[in-house]
Image 1 (cartoon, one colour):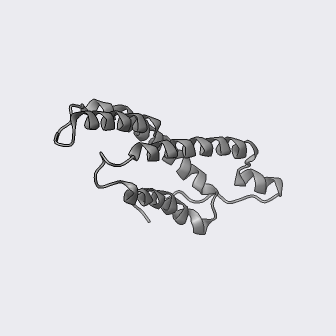
Image 2 (cartoon, rainbow, N blue to C red):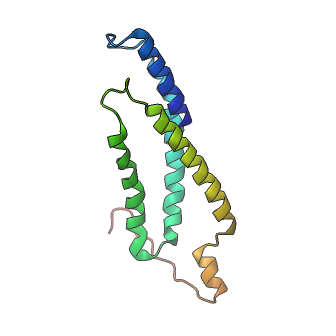
Image 3 (spheres, one colour):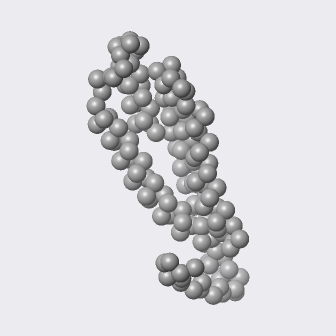
Length: 139
């Protein structure tokens, strides 16, 4: 998000220096490559760990946990201005960057004391049966 904010600031400066009559800005698409690479790699890493962690949820909440995290991302669409040259989209990117950083710090604190469900139940003398593996395409 910090990279996206910097790219948006560069785009806005270029748009303002060329005036409102210019339809195409002299910016290359290469400016978008770093942020898309970072977001793509991040999402791949997050979703893998997230799906693995959702095994800790009670059975009735697994689907809801996955859907709620995906649905929250759709809330940002109304925040984007119709005319991006008049908006301050970079402030949104900075806000998201700060929230993600704070979330990471909170994650570090809570992950220090987290104990997996299997270990907690084993400490209580309860053993869980392994869930049967269902081959892909068979529900």
